Length: 129
Image (spheres, rainbow, N blue to C red):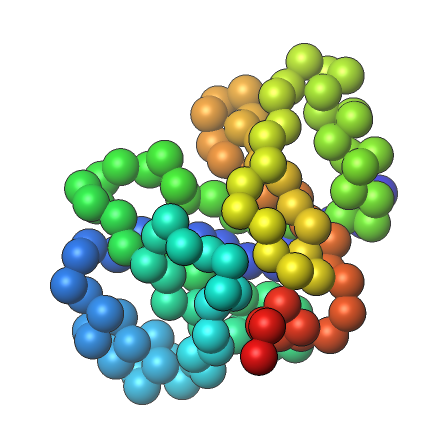
């Protein structure tokens, strides 16, 4: 199986949108892109790193809570990976759907959250508009 890092998701405190955009957009020069319309449970700022990788910076309070921090791996066969994890005794779960990005989550034996996905179509095809 081939893996490719697709995104990293890190927290930001409430009210930090301006300084977050200034640092990642202005200082680092990353391109901000719209988050999928289906992401409704968290306020997230997305940056495009290249043609397929992203940085997701979500609002989370308290900032020390690591429950949503994760990285995302693109895998060739998403269902085979889900089955492999389940057979090994892990408990994959689904989250809000993103069009063109079927996905699920799973925790590693240390409690770290990993998102697994397959990218279907072109970058940003998940937008409804």
